[in-house]
Image (cartoon, rainbow, N blue to C red; front, side):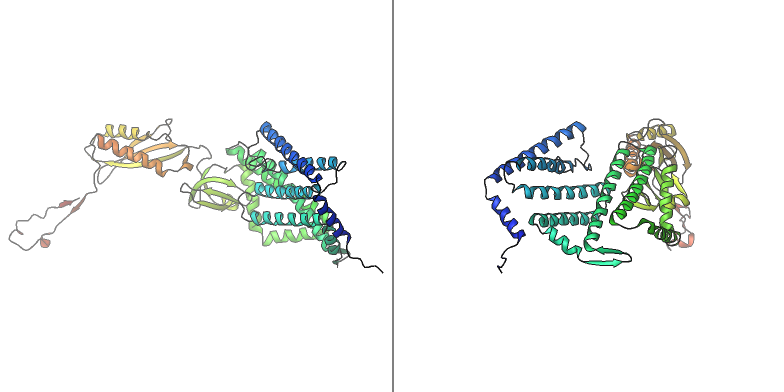
Length: 444
């Protein structure tokens, strides 16, 4: 019996490497270069025509080659070029190019969708790397011809669950299908969110945010159902699981469910909106985001507070911007009792207008608010519409202008004064002690 010294897979690999030594590979590389140039021109023209320069755009990205559209267009042109070249020359380079382009499309779709859906999440980076490594591994197995053999071996590892026989291959294919369906659902929800939240502010932004959150939750739920169906799981069995989940929510997850329900109620009622200045539990700041579970409040000094949505429903919340975006601020200054009150009022009113953030209508108000122990106390009040930009620098500018105006007109800002009474027995024992007067001695 003759001994078989080779295998069909090795023969194919040897033929494939031998084809690379032919001059026809130069034709394939030239066709690939033409495909790259055409893809770049087509995407660039479409990008300019649609004016799509958003950094978070999934299709276009920050640059021409950064989005999903460029590798997808290049893959389509690559298939066309391969079909045309197969009629004239034996293919070698395109047997590698097509799997590489498919892997690149898979990686780019997964990475860009996750970046758009979860821009601030730290767990996205490990998942992106996992997608990249798995895509390139499958590409290498595909090019070398090992992929069918690996799938056959995985299909032989089986176990029985009830009346269903599962294999490792079936589980892997189901997992890949589920991931693909969820990626598509995230892509659609991210596109809806970007269109809804584009160039809107205030109450309209909150309403659109509510619709965006609802659309994402609905699409993720439908995607999960489709993914489970693709795996082969009987959805009728989920009724028992749904009952168990309901009991779990009723007991262990009631706080979490309450926060999610409160989030939708807040966005629907618009009692607080993105951009409002609020005070919750002693923390004051501007609402920068409202998610399904919590609300982010950023103070004027840069600190951020994550407030559960249930707290905004069940506790007292001061909304400083609900009825009117204007905010009243004030500062207090003391002058000597012998000062000209009318002149001081005029100077303080003019000093409050040095900062352009202070509203001219209604303008600043100056009042003689108290007769202090050290001098006359005046309160300078003024309105602003942007407290999220900070109030410390604003007060500093106004106080400096007040100080300069009072010094220019030689109006005294009194130092604190105290009176010390000396008793006769506390006087020094000397010849002049008897002539000392027990009158009060002012100390400044």
